[in-house]
Structure formats: structure tokens, C-alpha cells
Image (cartoon, rainbow, N blue to C red; front, side):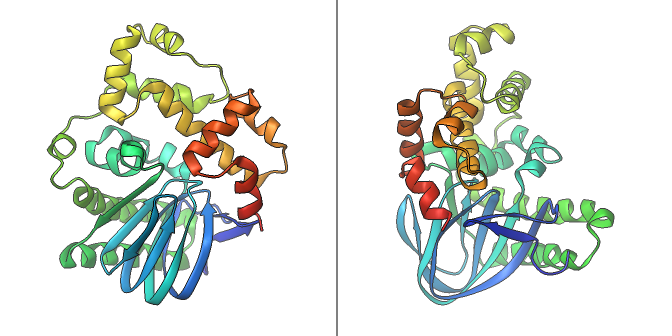
Length: 293
């Protein structure tokens, strides 16, 4: 795991060595052009300042600020002055397997799964660490960083352990003052089952009626149950899953946009185009052209 485990293909950053997650310091001066990635990225500002550019607009960053982005969300940095970021990258396979339990935890579920999509955030969540929280998080990230020099097969548990400590601290900060999240209960098993069904086959022509029938609930009750746990109704959750999948396929393959639309369950090209642009602020074609060059 020496060096960086990230590879780049046509502007898309991805894990190239099977790493489940990693952390590393990155200095920036001037400008870091907009880019996207196939994993969850968490950027912690440890020195300097910059202007963060994303679909949400431009926001000045200072020490202690944290930006979390779901896969496919684009961003960049402008006016970097001595900016040093500790970037933590988390693979989606890790989240959906060893860390799938985080969806059941109110705080971690908000940080990684529901918060970035609530309140029209479209995949981006920000928070701020005080000096003590920042020091703890940097300590966890440094431990994770040191593991890059170790053999992954023998230290996978260590990677997940340090990552979990970092995510735990971050989730407590992000949910501070949100009693309904911080003091919430674990996600209902039925919600977990529906999420697994949607993630297992996003191309299926799912309907609310079908989902409700499979789990033996009324559609209205399923919506209330699902929304209370995730912040989104089931079909909105499916739409988010589909656009994230589409963004990855646009940059990782040469498949036509029409084929990608069908592959994620939206065979109507005009409907796919509207949903993709409403989420990323760019058409699928512009998104592909911009981030593959």
C-alpha cells in the first residue's frame, strides 16, 4: 500500500489496488480544477484557506472545515493559500459490505447515507471541527495514513478500525444540536431490507406498490417509515442510487448515454436527462465530457 492507491481514468479517480479506504495529506496552491470520484471523499482542512467550488456554489474554507461528498459529486478548489487537506477516501464496496451497519446507526447513517441527500444538498455535506475534535480526527487519519506502508491483507481490520474512529467523531460533530438524529433509534429492519433490494437491482422497474407488497406494508406506511429513517421516500432514494450509478458508468465506460440510461432503470432518455441534470447540475453528456478530459 505504499504511495497512493488511487488511479485516474479520464478524470475519474478510483481505487487501483483494492484498498478499502485510505487517508493522506495534500497541499494545494492556486487552483485545483473541478473533478469527481467513484468513492466517498471526506476533505478535512488542516491548514490554510481556499474557496470550495461545487454544485452548491462557492464557499470559503478555513481550518477545521470538513466537506463530505458522495460518489459522482463534482468539486474543486480556488484561491488556495497554503491549503492543506487531509483527504479520507472510502470505497463504496466497503460501505455496502463491512460498514453496511452504519446505515442502522442514527449518527453514522446521517453522515454517510442520508445527510448528504437531505435538504437538497445533492450529495454534499459540510461541518466544522473545533480544535479538540480536529486534533482527534487528524490523529485517526495519521494512523490510517501510516497503514499505506503495510500489507493490506494483514491490516484490513486496522484500516477499518481507524476509519471507524474517524467517522464516529465526525458523525457526532455533524449531528450535534440535531436531537432527532443524535438521540434517534436504529434503522427499522424493513427499511434496511428495502434499501438492499433497491441497491441489489437498481435497473429493475421498481414501483412503490411493488416494494410495499414485498414487505407486506401499505405504501403510505412504507413511505413514512423509510423517510423517517433515511430522509427520503423509497423512490427518491432509488433515484439517488441511479444517478450515482450513472455518473460512474459515464466516466468508466464508453457506453452510449442511452445504454447507461437503460442500465440504471430509466429507459426513457428524456426522463433520464432531466433527473441526471437536476441532481448534478449538468447534462449527462456535459458531465462525461468535462470530467473525462
